[in-house]
Image (cartoon, rainbow, N blue to C red; front, side, top):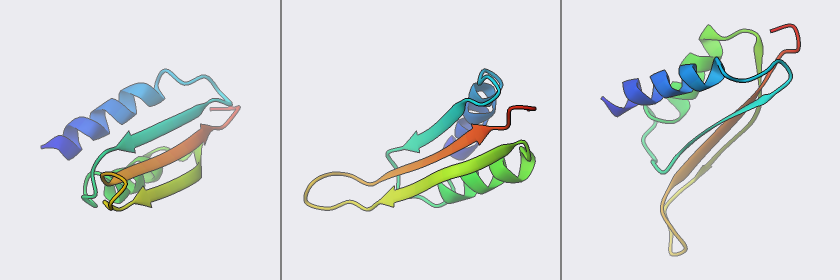
Length: 77
């Protein structure tokens, strides 16, 4: 269920980004459905956005797992 909530939050946030602006999506999860799959669905449904970064950190002695993806909204978008 969280993946659906997160996808909705990502869509809502994207609607508020000005053309040329940056959107960041981050979770403190290592689950593919919440991370890479959500980012892939967003990219597939938002062709006016260009992915600029994607990073995943796995849990270790220094902290928990984490995911980050960023996109830039096309100026014409």
